[in-house]
Structure formats: C-alpha cells, structure tokens
Length: 187
Image (cartoon, rainbow, N blue to C red):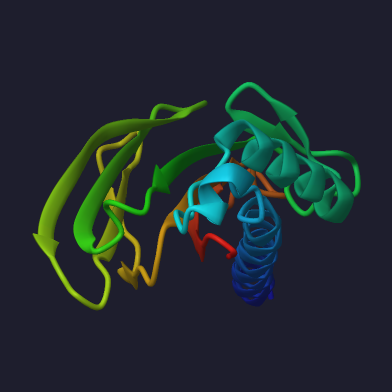
C-alpha cells in the first residue's frame, strides 16, 4: 500500500512540474510580447527597428507583476503568494538587434544557485531566412540542458528563466528546469 502511495506522489509531483513549466512559459511569452513594443520611435521613422532596452524591461516587469504576481528584484522575479512558483525566478535577457538576427547564435548560460549568468554568446553562420538560436543552461551540478533551437525572423528579445524550487515533499526531487521566450520586435 505504501509503495502505491509513493508512486502516486511521484506522479502527482511530475504533473505539478509540467503544469508549472507550462505556466511559467506562458508568463514569459506574455511579458516578452509586451516588452517588444518598446521600439525606438525615431529610428523606426528611418526604417530601423531597434529596442529601447530600459523601457522593454519596465514593460516586461509590469506584465510579470500583472499576470503572475511577480516583482522584479535585481536579476530575479520574486513570487507573491498566488504566483505559480514559490522561489525566486532568476532570468537572463539578451537582445539580438537588426544587424545580427540573420546570424546563428549559441547562448550558453550557467545557473549558480541564485543567478543565471552568461558564459558565452557565440555567433555562427549567416542565414538569409534568419539565424538559429541555441540556448544551453549549465546547472550547478554541471549538467547541460539544451533547449530546442529557435529560428529568428527579425530583431529579437530573448528571455531565459530558470525555475529551481523546493518540492512539496522533502523526499521528492526539486523542480528545476529552464524556460526560454524569443519574441520578434513589434513593428
């Protein structure tokens, strides 16, 4: 009986993890979409689509607060009581401008337990249809988590978050996974 109860707990925990991953992905996508409307109006009149990065982050943080109850503190979003995660959500952002979106980019990040830091950003081949973005997150234990590659269709704002929180029962593993959002700047 105890064995079946333990299996049931693992199944429920896996389901909770998948729901959190889906919810965090949706929050990032909505916030990043809102951030990409922070386009420089002067350059836009000259036909150049470029991001005003400070305004973009203000818009991103505002949407994370409205939709998920998160408040921005340095390089992490701190959850409120009603947020989908219970621990701070470290994130990293990267802007791919109008000169670089056709070039492949390998973005390698390292999670050190509290922060998501860039190890390197390696440009690659140039593609006429848009560069391929490959994001790899290295965990504290040295495990490399490669996210599915994305193809850019224009200047893009990239946000990577890393969920690392305690499980609801101490016998279960922590919920740890990266999530990425890549949004083209809105013309």
